[in-house]
Length: 430
Ligand SMILES: Cc1cc2nc3c(=O)[nH]c(=O)nc-3n(C[C@H](O)[C@H](O)[C@H](O)COP(=O)(O)OP(=O)(O)OC[C@H]3O[C@@H](n4cnc5c(N)ncnc54)[C@H](O)[C@@H]3O)c2cc1C
Ligand code: SF4
Image 1 (tube, rainbow, N blue to C red):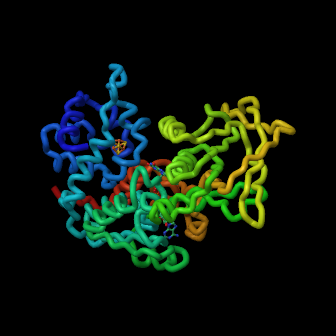
Image 2: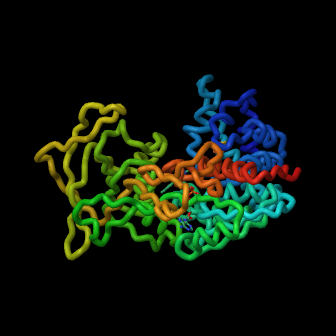
Image 3: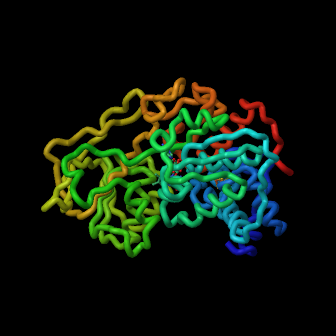
């Protein structure tokens, strides 16, 4: 958007009282407030409203599923009109200040307290920034080379680039937050050490690698996890990304959609999305699905992979079987049942698993008082505090895998929780 387009779009806003868009945003950005500032050409003021509520306002403007959040709640729907393009306006305002390195957010007066954040993804970045603004000294530890978590390594390149994520890392760093990359907690630094050096510890470790499918042929060359493949698309020049001529992706969540659209855009001739339930049960957002349809992806519904076929250790196809949906269970979910003798094969040279991510929280089992759920997520109270009062947690490792904006909201809630628990009531600088 250029300034003129932004001003025209901003002028459509009705500036609702108790705005439903703000209520629908997990970080409760004052949406009418920032849009009004854009309309009056006060772009800095708009960015300040956004960053005050959400330090990752830039990436959220790019990656938020706005159709189901702020824009989905816009009253324009009731009038039969197009909702205000809140995500794009947000991006316009924050891009404006970050590109010019305009400093709007300042660190607070030092309060002498220290906090460690484990992980440097959106949850930890938001927690760290909010704490720094309250005067805490914060250190982030991350096992990866670059900070930013999935914002840097995982979210589809057509939505956001690693360089966009790094601009936000710089913003957080400008508040005096220290980053220690290539440092894995539990291996390179112990919890005993962290507890000695810090007054509170925030756990924002996200989720881990993609689950295996436990079918024969998964070890063939040409089979990979979704995350591992998407990381290549973010870190390498597009010309160096290895993509098959014919690609099958297993799963139907948003990650699967990212894989199939990226594979098509990188030149795959035929791309299949294989899902054992029907189109109606697919977990991906509708607009993401529409995007993949436009990209010419083939959808194989009610189809379950049986084995991956190979020659000389390399993928050459995938054998599948048809399914039908059984009666709804107690939760109303219809389990897929195999249709006997319905096997068929398709020729592919690349298979990508997009069947969810494993938890990475086992290393917390040694910390007294921290409780994990069956699925590995960390149990916290409404202040994001765990059963061990010194430890707080948020983001994917707590919510099981939602969106960037949810991780930001939980990171900020944890910062407020830590501040209250330590009895620090520093107001933010004006
Ligand atoms: C493929 C994909 C596409 C997505 N697309 C979108 C999208 O379009 N829009 C959207 O809003 N959300 C999207 N998401 C979800 C979003 O990326 C996550 O919700 C968000 O990144 C969660 O933030 P987090 O800080 O909890 O975890 P993460 O971003 O996963 O960060 C966790 C960090 O912790 C580090 N870590 C882990 N263990 C340790 C340890 N022991 N010691 C030190 N460091 C450790 C990791 O290296 C990582 O950097 C997507 C997710 C995936 C997988
Ligand atoms: S952070 Fe996301 S959900 Fe919230 S107003 Fe911005 S684009 Fe909408």
